[in-house]
Image (cartoon, rainbow over all chains, first blue to last red; front, side):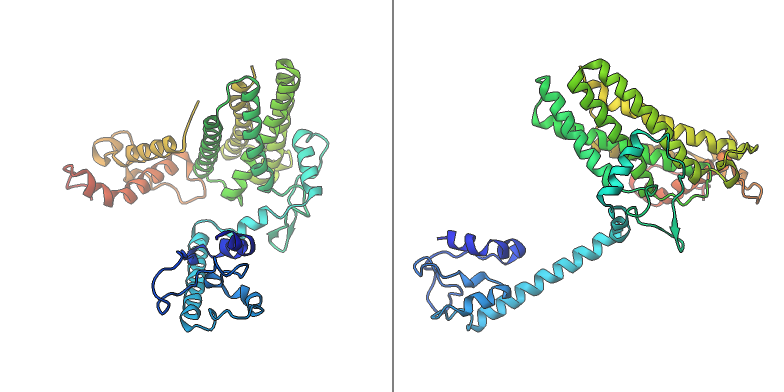
Length: 308
Length: 80
């Protein structure tokens, strides 16, 4: 009965779930029945709860008097206007909390950028120019500049980290599906706390910087790459390999963060390497080093219990 | 450590509550962190202590409206 609908109407049904109306066979007299029971009618589509996109399809079937009924027209029009209203409201409210347009900038990446950035995260020693290039006051999209922060690598890294953690737990027969959720929320909490602490310290030291919260989130998320490398090495080759690769990745992330944050947090002169005296510059330097030093600590903290 | 999001929210609320109940007269002025002691120089170097005092004061101001209603404790009338 319902199978014909699911085969040919699946996509439309998913689009407008609010319009789904139950079709119990033989309910009520013909006058008040909105949708006829097509279980006897063979392969005709159940046009009662179709939206307008199925219009061309149903035109070909003769004998269907459904669409000519004014009630069903009204119902379809009402339902579709409800759905579009709902979508507008969701868009408007969502945009208030999460700036969608700003987020799109951080996901404008391509394969070349991702490859170069991953290489930079594991081996930042040869890279020379760490400045983010601008294009008339707006930063260039990550696709065109390897120094720009993005959110694609941190997001993918986070998810991969959880999967690898599950894999590691599984090889030690400690796995259960709830543990995945526990790992995920734990790592997320540490990430949020780190971003909040960095924000607080930036506020206290009154640094005039153009680092946004999302930038900080991106920088905090880059450590997941090193953690995954360490975990995979530990799974494949045992504990010494884990420690060695973690050490390498910790050093790499430390250098990466210092070189990236130096340009953003320190004043112009200090960023070029000249020694600028003054309490404020010293404070900023300490802050940069503290942020960079927190990364290896987190990397070790979040992975050591997974490698036995 | 198995942290959950809920424990983070709990900790955040408790911290904000702790900052909000710091009493102006009895405590903050005594240790030199009162409101009247934060008017420093007008240069661009407020310093950490002044920033902290401003932060505490702003948290207390924001939380004050709800605090009076919900805690029901007798608040010092001089504190305005």
